[in-house]
Image (cartoon, rainbow, N blue to C red; front, side):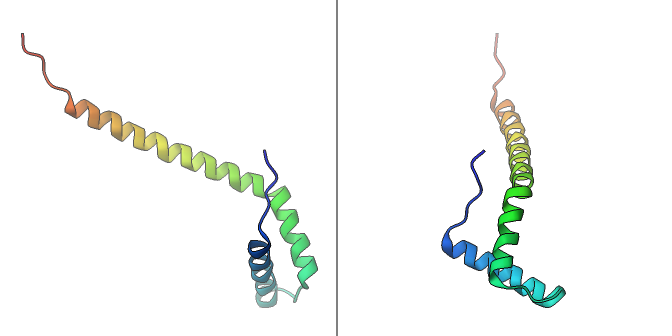
Length: 81
């Protein structure tokens, strides 16, 4: 799997959100520690969220395919002999 990377703008937004969370819920955190924390989560936990997203997308697609199969069955016409 490809490494999870963020653009400069995305990373700045995520670091800002991490810092806001720490300010609100814990002790204030600097930009560099917040960036390290983001990198840690992206590397260590990111793949778990990514894989969960893939499984959810697969389940949604399979459910939709079942609906399509049912729709096709409804379109079938009876053969006359």
